[in-house]
Figure (tube, each protein chain N blue to C red):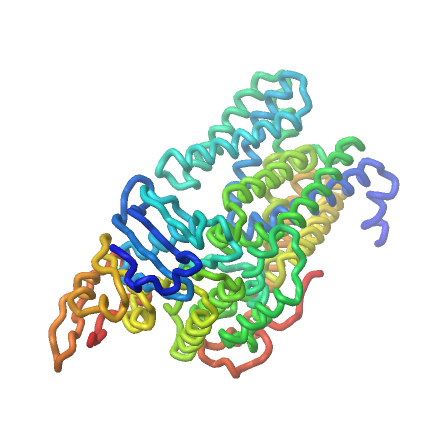
Length: 301
Length: 278
């Protein structure tokens, strides 16, 4: 029984590498994804991920490292969205949507010039976690540490942005600047994760663990930690499934992450139903209940 | 328009001074001709219906929107230049709150302006937070998540955050909307205490009683209807012009029958509907 859970990793260096890379992706996605979920930037994250595609494709054709192309693509996406939202009366969701499909189409068009079209496209979209190299893991580690440091450094403006951009601004933290930094961190996460889970699936790792953590967490820090742990768990489960069932690793990891979210959602629902309407008391009853509703249980930390 | 209070509170320079100010969004002016002088420790009520320009003016003072023309001086400097000395409380949209933050965390955010990026919170910060929580009677629910609170409770939390800033000028956009009578009383107590400490305030409101409690009033209806000391300016005629009201006299009082609303469905719009004006 134990061998079912351990043996895939025991004798296979590539499986261990995949696990390490996946955990690093989970940690950076958990931290950044927390802000993506709290600020409702899901669509933006998706767009950044797809914006990277034509960049990677161009880099591939020119024989440059894909990561450079991904960074250029994501940067173009951030600038493009900012430009469209400022210059037109369209909402940013329309701007993002248009750029998003445009960049995706451009990426596919460029890749189609490549000799191994479908192979390249699949690798970009879904990653190649089982073929990950030590150098790429190192890069992932550096990025994860960088993201962690940035979030510690900017915790106050980021928290204020989640609460209200106006409050950030009037507290002396220019909202546009810190929003830009936040987008930069999302882009960084996407760019360094594309080798592992691919530009299409990184979005799942950005959202699912953070959304699952949001169901139970009562502190932002706890939510990041929980998201990182849930992501790592999903990576492990995904790799296990991939090994035993012979399915694509990137897909099975993202699939596990989504499954974990829905399981926890169901648990949260059942729990809420069990508490049976013992929600917050109405306003104007200050003497009532010195403790919060929901209680201290189920902090995933 | 000149100083309505003949120099009161102006010894250390005004808290807010605007000259020939035009505010609006994009290129469209909402209100023009805003000339206001507010001394230290004095209070100004911005009175008007929804869409009258109260919020726009308040945002311009807070530095959230740039003036279309004219000048604004806040505590002797441009808006936003001294974030720790000015506190702003905007109108919130509670639907966006799935934040995993407790009441205490939200109130503590009021100290971020003086703490900056990495400053360590000290005893003074904790004292400010504690005082704000006591003033708004949030002690029993300090550990509650924001998502578990009612609209009125949230409003108290946001106000406590503003109070915790310990600013010299507070800018409040309909702070008492949604609050029950007890909370309103806490809010009034705060304003009084703040004025005693020399804190100046600018309050946007629909509520004539709330405006009456201020030193000055500025009546807005996408234009300046009147500006002066609150007692003199808040007359039946001026208020009617401000709200576009249809009124009738009943037993020597003006009773407001109907009001035009810029937007619908906002709370507080009822406040001036049947308000008796002496």
